[in-house]
Length: 118
Length: 113
Image: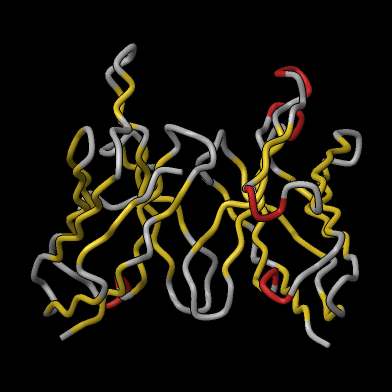
């Protein structure tokens, strides 16, 4: 069965950093487009970032609100993607979901909670 | 960015009845070269991660009951849930993937009347 498992969330002060991980299993991870989608408390869904398969160039794309602060990378030998989040802001507080799909999110993980607070 | 506006924001429907959710895009999401609408629908039930329902505006994902149907083209789309069941209580989102960044509607909260 295909699944995604996120980890790395937690409480961090404004300006701090966190690295989220997402491990995939049960599907061909190297061929998969990987995304992060977040949901702030009481708000709707927001697409955050995407990384293409290495076979498609491995390029990344980000929503404007996180460009220059977040970096998405992948290690296909570990079937894992990493979201490095720097210069965190209070408005980055959200549940972060790892998903698969080319801009759509077909498979979702359970999410990892990021709280940015002083 | 493409803005998706869903209506209504809240919907209350009796068991066994039909629920209809609208999603209007600020610009077309129809790609002329393949005649496909780059519009998806998701269900987000309380205590669960969101679930992918429909792609290309009307193509249900594997295992999605045929009670769920999507329609529309260009800028106007609908998600219809027929024969409403208790497990359909959720927030429903449309999403466009025509242009980057992919954007979601604000959500429609569906409850049982």
